[in-house]
Structure formats: C-alpha cells, structure tokens
Image (tube, rainbow, N blue to C red):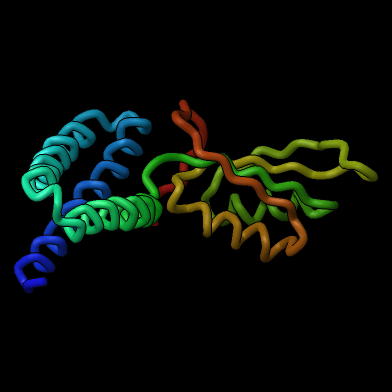
Length: 173
C-alpha cells in the first residue's frame, strides 16, 4: 500500500466530512426558512460531493477510498450537528413549572429583559406555577440559568419554534 492510496482516501474523507457537514446545516437552514442560505450551501455541498464520489467510483476496487467516503459521511454528520448547535439559529419556547416560586421566576426573567407569561396549573399533588417565554435559541442557557437560580427544582422544557409574531423581545446584550 502506497502513501498515494492513503492520501487519496484521506482527501475523500475530508471532502465527505465537509460536504455532509454542509448538508446537515443546509437542511436545518431550509427547515428554518432560510432559503437563500440553504441554496448557497447546497451549491457548494453538491460540488464537493461530486468530486468525492467520482474519486471513489473511478477507483471502486480501492477499499481505502470506500472507507474514507463512509467515515467522512459519519464524522461529517456529527460535525454538522455540532456546527448547527453552536450557531443556535431560530427560536425556542421555554416552559418552566415551579412549585410556589413562579412569580419570582417570572420577575427575574423580566429583570433580565425576557418576556414571561404566567399561568396556574394542576400538578399531580398541588397547584403549580407555569411560566412561558419565547427566546432566541442562543438565549436558552441564560433563561434556564435565571430560572434555576430562583428555583433549583423547577421543571424546565425547551421546544424549537418555527415562527413567533409580536410579543416582547429581549434587546440584544
């Protein structure tokens, strides 16, 4: 086995890592309605893909190329998901359920500039306080930290949202 074979497989691995990472981000951008960005990413993604697949097909008997292709796909998927999580584009709905400290949680969120809507709910054994806020995904850690500082036993759920209209939005800090 020559160094050229291994370098070729490594190049294919890297191309797949890049194009699959781009593909993961592209799909997530398309789901979030970012059509232009998704289209631009798709153009470069498919260009890289065509170069990589042509190298594998040209030398289909070279198992190192096949392994590089498959490995690049697997690692590219994980890298793409990590990139998307770091970008944190979009909105999230954060629901906080507190046993008796809901008003304090809502007030703390409001002091930090977040909107907060309060509800009463029926838990298994007691009446519970419920707080809902809609924030940018990158702000979710701040919201959960504020809520947890007031009520460390609060039950907190986070859901991605497609769109929100009107309401109170935190000014960027």
